[in-house]
Image 1 (cartoon, rainbow, N blue to C red):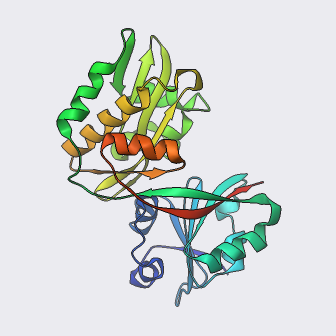
Image 2 (image 1 turned 180 degrees about the vertical axis):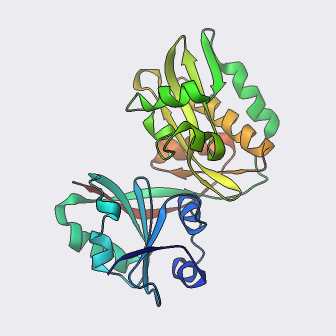
Length: 254
């Protein structure tokens, strides 16, 4: 029987020092949830937050098929601890599972060139405005498919105000780009960056990212970054991060 629980030393040992901001948010009990095969002697564990599920310990089919709180979510990114978990995900999910590569970015607190990041704002074209996400902009982000994930893991503005942090660019009243916290953990955030399609390749994501990193540094938070694709890696490197390694994940549809 799958049960939800708070992390303890045994569960943390199952995940074995995995360096992922979203996973840390779950293990620390800040956001998301931890699910195990047995409360007393857990051998398999799943950490879930938003679109992501991380699997550790002994591969467990019941855990892979489990959906928290009767969730009807039709998309999830499953991240296996090892090949054995990956093979079981493919077996359980069949054609619904698409194997993908994601790109881990090194977590190095002192690599950022603050002066370079401050100069980024000067590249903002006339008519565009850079703002931190307040209550009005929080709800504006939720209105658009492309920008929803900037704030989607925070159930209301009060929760976002307490745990979240983000910056957006507007062209007049139109929201066009943003960088925000997909998740919050003790000592840092996991960054989400999105730009409206017709405004891409104009440097807006770089400006938003630079602003968010600076705001994090001022607050003593680490801006953790995980890349979905090579474009995201290139943007991260431009902002001062370093690429670490690729890893396998499975996008599950339906």
